[in-house]
Length: 500
Ligand code: BYC
Image (cartoon, rainbow, N blue to C red):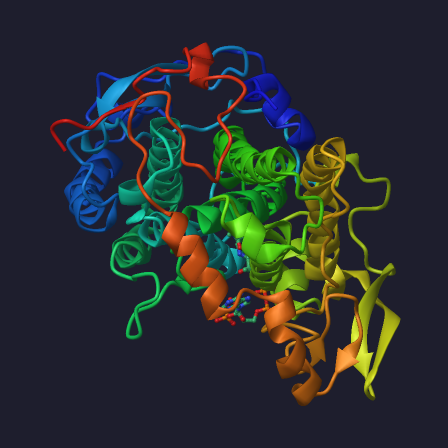
């Protein structure tokens, strides 16, 4: 899979409809395409937040590589046909900016009780706190992921991968800027306080953790990073796509542009896991091993056996499914019927977009049985987005399976049952196997190490995490990419680390 072009990237979310090129002003301290210099009060407030952001980046951003020159992509416009430029940059000098997709003249609210009314250009007063909460939750995930990944530079399997990590990190930083802009511009004093609090919560910290569960988990190794960028960034894609349908137009425009950046993160995840699988399959083939469960023999080759990769994927899939909230949720019903958050591909769906009388099938556990129940569709909005997410995950999994099939190995990756290893929602109180059987606590504990990585698996994965920083070299457990970033040659020096 070569890196998608911006046009491919935005297709699934019909993101930027307007062809008008909206250049980004790099003359201002804060690059932007929102004419920031015309609003001095806002400009001052954001320029006041900026040094705190840089302090946070230096404290909690990539550890040890702040002086390295990294081949980064910076947005220079929001036009799908040419919005980014590439060049070596030190990360703290990255020009984090405020970028909104172009305004669609005449846009109307796509869903809920205000459907068809002109999209809001200011915060609708009666929905202020719900809207602020959605923006804060979205914003909180961005610095959280940077914090989770901050130690990975030291064990990068190649300069190519190290560069991709840092690209993802700076763009998550930019996504934080996107939400902070909305808070500071539209929510006055409490918006400024929330913007500050976004820099104060810390992933995994007991006293002041990040808001959502998965963002307090550790990302201890590169395999976790690739799984995270495939599965958890995909929650980002789905949630941003739903927020891109917001009746609050500035949020919609922010999310539409964020989606173009998100596509690269998904690419990093899909190809990272795919290259790991490829290295395993090729090493097995060269050694004449056909049994994917010959764990010890496979691990001796310096690659990760496929069943362990499935276990790792099981963890990331289940933790990420929790990010959709409870399947049946009155919060989600309010967000939809107020018009603040739509569904995935809202405008393309063929229904009344109000759902007052509609139902949606939700899987639940009732009296110790798995049942599918028709639930009022408004209350099942999270469940529907989760189903859309699970369907969206399958494409990459199918492509991974093709790699294995090509090598003639009898193993296929699959998604565990929706209820597997859940902490939030309908299945939080039950144990469900990957195959979808309801289990006693005892049976769950007996099977757990077959379904999720054990300490021993983690120790093995960790033992492979040795840095590989010569241009063009790759660690044993991961295959080189097919194509370089921006078509650079195989031995390109993506990160110049001599000064870091
Ligand atoms: N952990 O009715 P409920 C991304 C809370 S990822 C902890 O079940 P609701 C990215 C919930 O906050 C996308 N708490 O769910 C990816 C609520 O608390 P309050 C991020 C949880 O409200 C990779 C209570 O439980 N964006 O961008 O319908 C790298 C009851 O809530 C969790 C968004 O999520 C949890 N997993 O939906 C970088 C979009 N789940 O408010 C970035 C914005 C629920 O009663 N957020 N709770 O104190 C939302 O749309 C909603 O807040 C949620 C929750 C979908 C997350």
